[in-house]
Image (cartoon, rainbow, N blue to C red; front, top):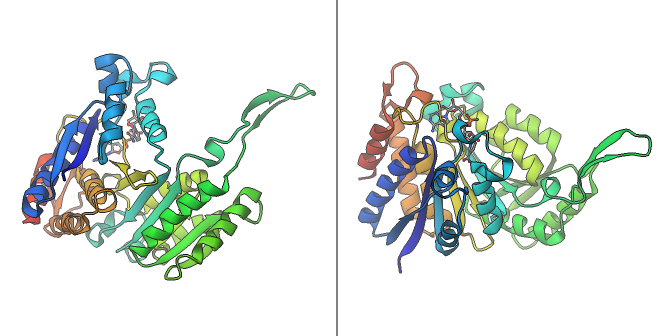
Amino acid sequence: MSKNILLLPGDGIGPEIVAEARKVLDRANDLYGLALAFDQAAVGGCSIDRCGVPLDDATLAKARAADAILMGAVGGPQWDGLERSLRPEKGLLKLRSELQLFANLRPAILYPQLAEASTLKAEVVAGLDILIVRELTGGIYFGEPRGIRTLESGEREGYNTYRYAEHEIERIGRNAFAMAMQRDRRLCSVDKANVLEATVLWREVMQRLAAEYPAVELSHMYVDNAAMQLVRAPKQFDVIVTGNMFGDILSDAAAMLTGSIGMLPSASLDKDRRGLYEPCHGSAPDIAGKGMANPLATILSAAMMLRYSLDLAPAAQAIEAAVGRVLDQGLRTADIYTAGCRKVSTAEMGDAVLAALE
Ligand code: NAD
């Protein structure tokens, strides 16, 4: 049976980098008989230009029907003046909420060949390979009540609600334990259980789940310490699981350990592991159309898609290894270029990964 992939190139560099990922997937399809079938649709600014909204019903229907979605990026200055509900990023947010993509996976991997690109000392980060599992649809970003109100004194007060129901913690927890089972089997749950009751419950649920995954070593860390440990000794972590807000902050910090935003893939999964895969970076309008964008984050997102949504781990591994070989050859797009390497364009980088696959 074929596996249906919906491509959503989006705006800016999106079409350029998704085209390279498509090339790599096509070749992997031929080499390994993966039975991948592709469809394509518009999301973000290009959808606004075409039909007035960032995500139309037809595209949403295609997204629901797909086994997995590979996205480029959305947004750009030409749409910044639009009213908030019509902005390009609303298309992405709607996809995440309509498809109930509650588990956000962000690996922070530093290929040893790129250790010099990090702002941290090479020995601290070389070979870094951590996975942050962030809850994406709950927590303080969505909790009610919320707002800004005027108190009797006349002073204004802003307030938000940090809440997690047990089933929300349980489903992200199971996801994280399952990820840890596929890796080094160490899971660190990050909370603030010394201060926040919502995270006391978070910790309790994680401890309860641990009994179901005896092969996984579960540890707990307060978020302030986790932030410190991430920059002090990041290689101590294998998988980190945390709530929406802490995950938002820690995953950006972890991303910057690698020093190269053009290298970082991500996935957002539903309860059946169907998902949306995209690079962590945005649409980079400053370099769009110049053939300068690094396509590797998108190619690595495609590899994650094969592994997590399509059960094709060997092909995923082959693509990741091909990326490693291309870096060994000294090929670099401008964002990861260092002296002594060979600077290549977006398409040349995609071609090199293709060649390394064979
Ligand atoms: P950005 O990630 O697009 O760019 C930040 C910097 O990194 C730029 O200098 C850019 O040239 C560079 N960069 C990003 N990706 C690169 C790549 N693959 N190769 C080489 N260099 C790369 O962030 P921004 O400039 O803050 O945002 C630009 C637009 O993207 C905005 O409209 C923003 O809303 C949107 N955005 C979209 C997403 C998404 O679609 N998920 C995420 C973030 C930002």
